[in-house]
Image (cartoon, rainbow, N blue to C red; front, side, top):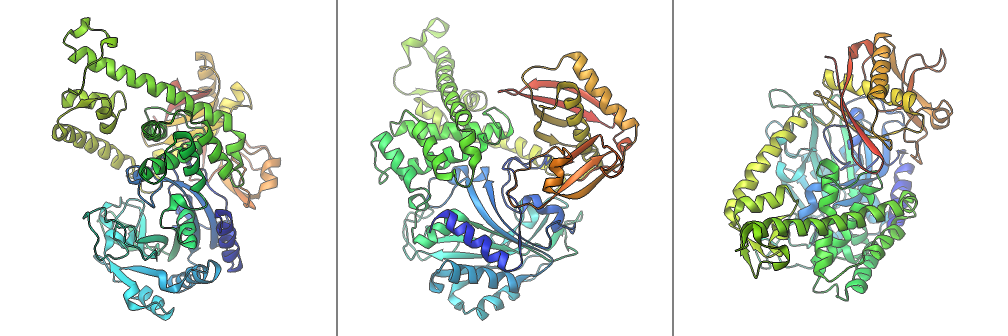
Length: 610
């Protein structure tokens, strides 16, 4: 059963159950300052889980391209990937535990034909103020699951929110208890934690069990006093990885040897003259990291030292390290194989293949130069001849360097500790770890501040900024031409960051014109409102946005100015909201700087409400 077969079966199954298919959201979300990538199918649905009416109804289904940066270091075992496809179905208050667990059980056992004896489940064991999930336990028992196939775990295992456990959830975030389903391969692998075989349970890391689906009962929201309050509606948020379901249907314990990934391993074997057996970790990392890189680049991201670009750079360089370790040189056949594997479902990869390939090969060249620069930096400090030494002399053997210099190689040159050591440099691991911990604490503090608004920052200043991006977008098109389109944005209460396609820097006169237009529209106090329109109608009126959602029948269009029925609006744009009611609420708009972020993409920083 191929990935396409599973996706089609899943969508058809839930459509028969009254669900409507919604489109795959962009892998790089727009106007969401809280996250770099779409990491789950529920991410774009937060407003609707909170009670807003969804245009497609209360029962939804889709397949979503996802990326989780936190799993980068986990890749290399038999099951973890950073990029994956998540099957999702949602109930926005329409049904709850009993219906959901029956639905998924029927899909697994009848549609996919999985043996009931190979399926295990886990259930939430309770947390402060949130009771033990005896309801799910009863449903699983009624479905015929044996008691020894049912396990209760705490909030660290069976509670889901984007931030983690209830303690980690920021104020305003939603979450809830969940019930996971695991497939038992019946083979106990070498245990990664204890270094020996042992009795295990579904949450063991030994590889015997594989989680294939998670039904989250999204019904709580974090309050200012730290408590969890029930939402106005009880929701279901289900997610199941396509890659893992393939492994279960094939009874293949290593997902990298399934129908989806197996040809990738074969390609790497041919390019490196190495066998998968004996080089599993390296080939798994190469496979995952370049698949993820291809999809991220297709979204317009390029390698850099910031945000999505930093993650992309890390993926490419880590993949290159392992490819080089196996003796590989030419990446092109790997990239061609990835596009061939996904072309039927993601045509954009074919359309942008040359751009994707060139971006990765250019980063490979930059990385080679970075390695040489790093060697030169160390050589000048540690060569017996000092500054008079020549790089060509090279340092002989293993060179011990300070933890400070190792940290410079990490922060300035982008080399991981493993990469530094592979160059022949050793350092005090404990001192380096202390510096890394301090660095991570600063990063976490910044991330916590950035995440303070919950799943989407709805503070007054951020909402003002969100509406201002619509004015900015149209003003740029007025000044520079209608070929200009937004390629990304990040909006916080402190500033607006707006990316758009343009080949050169804006002149001071152009910047002034754009500022003046936006401020004029603010002074005009134009109304801001949305309408749900058929996709065809949205295109006809010239609304700006991404209209490649194959299965979306209606889209949400935000108008600034009159609607199409009562006059010509200044701006009409595809967007999920939220926005101010009138432009005067923005108060003022000022561009503070612009910069080039590569490949014909400009970035503008601006402020509102000063």
